[in-house]
Image 1 (tube, rainbow, N blue to C red):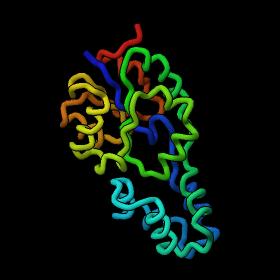
Image 2 (cartoon, rainbow, N blue to C red):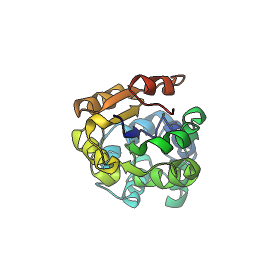
Image 3 (cartoon, helix red, strand yellow):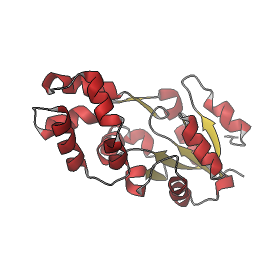
Length: 202
């Protein structure tokens, strides 16, 4: 029997676009938009930040130096975090799902993004029983310890949980840990997919 639903945040509960940040940086940076995107998000810097190995201030300071940003850190932070938009069809399912299942966030994220989306999506995240985030867990999806951490928050065994994520590699990681998974794409009938795995609102 399914007791818990684990939801990714980015591109499931809310869409994100890192280019919204790098386009803002470009006005005061020494790099092009594309070069910044690769420098910030494709290397070890983001992995370290999302795994909690560096703080928000350390990350911002490194980014400012890396891209040659001439503005203050407060501006850099504001431009960095404002990248999310709501995925309304999924958010509207949460109140009903929360009445029957334990909802747990299962997100690769960092402390700055998390602080921002926890504030701006508070109306929706209040339906969650626990917020599992990589920067607090010290490990990212799809590594097995991340799913062990989230199952602890869910207070259930792997066969009692369903995980929803937009990346097939993350879903494969969850399935390797014994959790049933759904790869979400825009337009996916999530309730139908959940029904197939034994989740229902009746």
